Image (tube, rainbow, N blue to C red; front, top):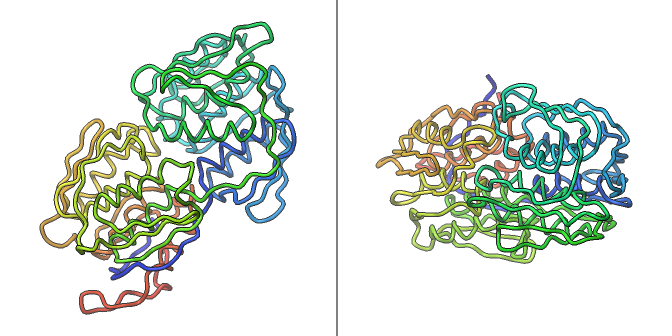
Amino acid sequence: MKFIDLPVVGRAQGIVRLPGSKSISNRILLLAAMSEGVTDICDLLASDDTARMLDALSTLGVSILRIGKDHYRVQGVGSQFPLRFPAMEADLSLGNAGTVFRPLTAVLALAQGYYRLSGVPRMHERPIGDLVDALRQAGANINYLGKEGFPPLQIKPGRIHSGEITVRGNVSSQFLTALLMVLPFLRTEMDELPAITVTGELISRPYIDLTIALMARFGVQVEREGWRRFTVSADQRYRSPGQVFVEGDASSASYFLAAGAIGGGPVRVEGIGRDSVQGDIRFAEALGQMGADIRFGDNWIEAGAPGSGSLRAIDLDCNHIPDAAMTLAVTALFAQGTTLLRNIASWRVKETDRIAAMAQELRKLGAEVEEGHDFLQITPPAGELVANAAIDTYDDHRMAMCFSLVSFGAPVRINDPQCVSKTFPDYFEKFAAIIPPGPVHGKFAAPVDSFDIL
């Protein structure tokens, strides 16, 4: 098994230019494909997940031209009714990319073609039944090819109609995102306007705000009544805005901001700022509650160590930062007291069962961990972190990146570090770049070139 050994490090300081947001990149690619006109997408994230979306859209016959590094030109298929792609039959392998699989399921369910959607084994363990049930309410013809309620899926032409769709909100916000993105296509000239009603608590609400904001960039305004009912008025179609820029990834920013808070700082991330449309920007607020010194600019956020010198534990409802909250779990190892992260049930259905995985790996470092259906409680060890622990990453990019922070307290081995290619292929190079040489407990931090993957 390949791994990377991170030596103990003493300080974090520097500036990091963030890669593009995965959530924004894949939403914009799909919106551009469904729009009238040509869209130039700049600063698109280069990663496995975006490659899955690019490959899928190309297979469906969408014209995509790479203009330069991270710059693509997409010729939309037009927002005709019903939606049509040039390829009316396709077999799509979508890896473990939820931001590809869920929205494409909704889009292709309305496209009146014959499609098969599959992924890696873990994707076939991630539930999709609530989305399929909702699409069936609109007349979609979707069949399970394996276990009921899970991928892979077979999609055939259905009898699509308008009306009220209901979907549960407490499993994955990606289900509602997928339905919102096809809402303009769930109507005919004479039918009532379509609507989506959410039952139960809606988790990860900032991701829904992000979806609605990006739909507006492409000319479709979503009206909502609280977080319960969503509609689109008549005669709205997706139209290209011409050129769009992808913000830096706020979830990826969390690792470097935490490094600044733990390792003294300051560490500045560029590509997002105080007006970011991404919910995970509020991770910085959580660090501030832990005592970190946080500063905001128009296109940057900076983090440094607390003035008191020590981070403190927090009790936090993490519904608004489900991905970035993973970084808080590792940051808790460096905080005084017991940290409680609540309302994180969605971790169970991500790239891995993140609650179970995080609990298992934190215990290797000597932490006392209690896990529940939707919470994680972390108490750091009374003494130093266990040195040279081998952290398993479960083919989950965020596990690998989160646990790199352990190196501020002890040398650590990260197994299968290549999994970061899902969203941040050069993460460990960027991480090494903010670690200046310096004394660590009477020794010296390793130089940048020692961060070798073996």
